[in-house]
Image (tube, rainbow, N blue to C red; front, side, top):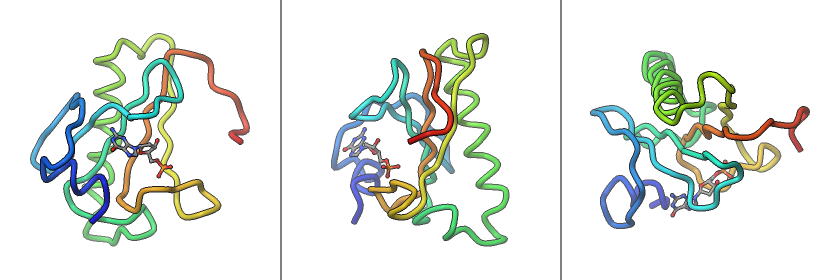
Length: 112
Ligand code: DGP
């Protein structure tokens, strides 16, 4: 069971920013920017690489939730970044699909 599955099950507390029947958003425990949230599906997909045709709408929903939590955090004017890591080279450490929403400072490019 991943740490995010345990958060979804209520076994580990999280600072929730948004919840619906398909997805939840909460603050990252190790923020890499003044605002850093994670958007995850309730469905235990490992990453975007694990998503099938049947998950197309869910993936779109996750992006819309990311935009919503960013707007709720007042980031629309300044901008923000939405990123998802996949596998070892992508820097993924938790095998439950998640979108990082980062903002509140200028982001570097390319990412490290
Ligand atoms: P990634 O490296 O892309 O798999 O990102 C995983 C993120 O999950 C990382 O930024 C830290 C965050 N994280 C890990 N454990 C917890 C936790 O227990 N609670 C919260 N809120 N975030 C966590």
